[in-house]
Length: 132
Image (cartoon, rainbow, N blue to C red; front, side, top):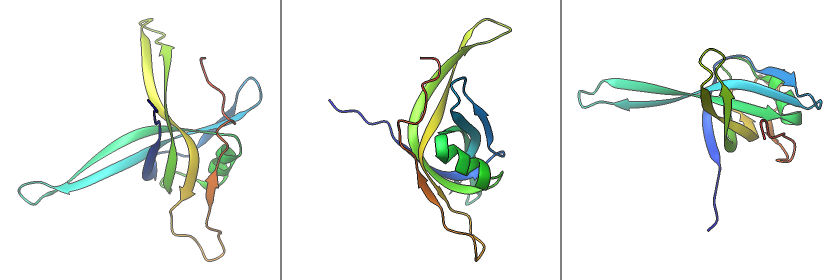
């Protein structure tokens, strides 16, 4: 049976993108994305809930994120779910966290007159599998 691992989100960056290089020299960029949901409760009051999602971006797409995005930027991101694990230094316990590995990104902020509209796609073979 076929499977599908695809996520599409629209949200705002919670912090400026941070980039680093892997030991093999590949660039990877990380940032958090706030995805909000608004609704009215039975009393007519507006309620809001925000999910925070960790985003990982590889290669040229990561470079574009580092150059053009900042805290508060509104973006559309499409990618895949990836769960990593690490060992907690204090307890020695294995912890898991899930992130989105971005493959397509589109800037949704209103732009200045001379600023180009940007939509960028990344070749899915650019990233490395951390911990595998």
